[in-house]
Image (cartoon, rainbow, N blue to C red; front, side, top):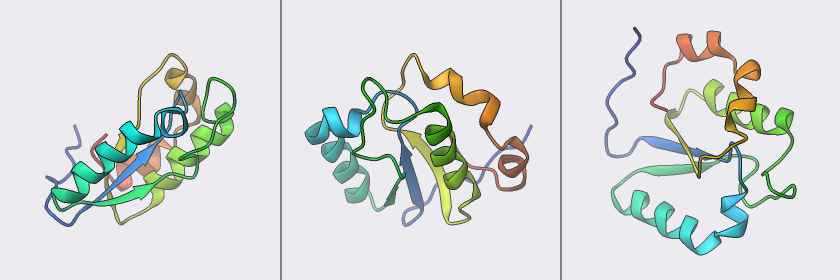
Length: 108
């Protein structure tokens, strides 16, 4: 089992949208959560679909998988946090770059 490093103040947490476009439909709620993490001393990196909407999802399966894989490949990111879960999140599993995640482990 691979265990990522413990998060420390100053680390970068990436936020992505694996399903529902919560960053677009619940913007105030999202901003409160983002501000809370920043007040705790973390840097926040928003995924490429932040604030975007494709009907009931943040993007197509491939767009959402691309967003996640970009964050997996980003060496500055120590943790990847979903803005919200959802019924469409599992559709990303076949597209995740698991080898990159093993080489560059992150908290999910």
